[in-house]
Length: 208
Image (cartoon, rainbow, N blue to C red; front, side):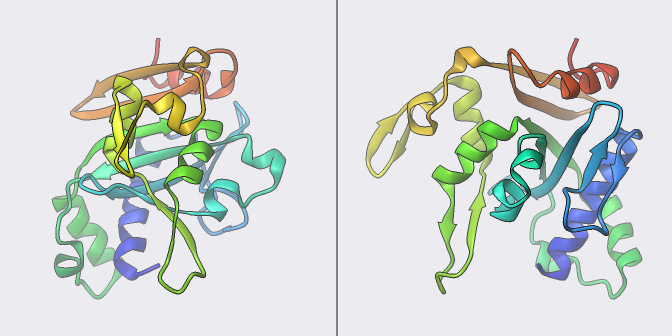
């Protein structure tokens, strides 16, 4: 992870703590996801990326925790508008970088994704680096647009619908979208289940 990537990730974590004050920050402990909600007993993995290409996930952040923990990790994926990051974020201290990001970076959209759906997306969209040693996955905004709008898309010259390509049933999931102070919050959650995070989102006026 580069300094620039780490600083933008820290900015996103600060954004979430400011928005959701009940979250417990686990950032220093990389054996567990970034945040925990003790009231509703679920975890959050927070990842941010430019809105043009999306957040980049590593395998351990999706399927690398214990099997029981993986089932309770929801991904909060932030899409920001901070272009040319490596040319602009050159301040020498973390405080300086965070001050600059506070003035120049906005999160335009946050996608909140159920762990089962996120795993299916990861397994279909992941790639191997040039050395063949690291699995990673960049989730573009268009991936979620396709799912939310149930629209066809191309892979290897063939047309697919999201359900068939990612192997899930839309009937099993509910979708929500709210614009809060200029930030679009979208979510994919199970119709039956995910009660803890649903309660959390209701408390924070994101679903009703």
